[in-house]
Length: 542
Image: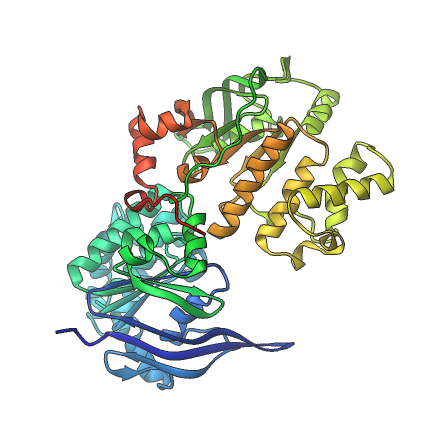
């Protein structure tokens, strides 16, 4: 006998009021979650998946409205329910794990107080007992030393710890349904795996159902019983996980599958034979001073004895979690920061302590693409001005030739010429990152350091940018030092991988060798954390 759904959504439509009129975000969708079931809602940014999740508990923004449809939880309709009914359902019946703990936690309240508040609001315990039970719930959510953490403020915790606090708040009152809205998208893959494993364990213990919102089909494949695929506010495909992953019917689902880094086969440029060393660093170290304390350390070693090389036309990936020292290493290699110790050679020349003249020439031959295209492009400039800026700085060509070069570069990164007169705010995240890549290529550099260049992008846009980088390397012979926390991403384009941990390189190997025969335990941990590893599907037809 099939159980009655715990959550039932029928013909739900949600729109947002804007200056230019009403914009539909969710267009008449149907969705069910049964007791004890995990359902993943998958789609890119703007697909309507988070709007759907927030509509369930009526936590939509002020300019949003439910146009029509039914949201029924445990037999009770919520779409028009009064606020007092919603307050009794939120937390006690439905727990929400939001995406961004930096925004979702109260910065002026200790985390223990924020968990205890849920217990008090739903009369789960007395005020006197709430503090002690909050510590127990933080422990249940996997926070180390929960008694200490309960007395801390959100800013004193890491991103992974803050996410665990949000999970603790969501499970505190024993809800029957947990809505997890991109709960780990901002975290390293190893932290992501630990938190999702823990959430899965808590759900199994309590028998609660889960509505998991994610942009990553590989995560959904690992965690969900059923998958609901959304595109442009509509459900385009739904079914058991094995069916959706093994035999996707809709073109959009197929495209998502082909885009997920852990589910698509590698696509690398052929390394150029006999290119020789381009960049070589030996025993590189960087220390940063710490605030003075009576007996604490005076500095921290962010990079500690790092050695590696990059050949002409080759891609070396530096992989590690946040705080491993990989981004600092990239900045040192470009002499954007001075090393404490070690040697840096570029095309055979020692540039470790080079003066301004040499480093200026280095800027012409080595460029950087930052992680966040929203922050790295000047919002006041047009795209043409952004791309032409390196040419102006180095006095390359005249105004007409620089404009022609900008147009050629836009064409090379697969953007239309009409983008030249637009500003960054008028572009999508993927388009902005393409502009950043075009700017980096303006001076025809030999080396581009890519610092997490796709981590802020949807998987399909991510795949497009990775394919673009591979094609550019094949066409121009540019070398990449590619910095990432995600081994699945670097497998797509890297010829060799260096794994960093705590400021040191613990293993370096050709990419396929590292994936098939990892030597270091930490490398094995990173590989095990790749979502979708157990569900890898090759040759999905687009």
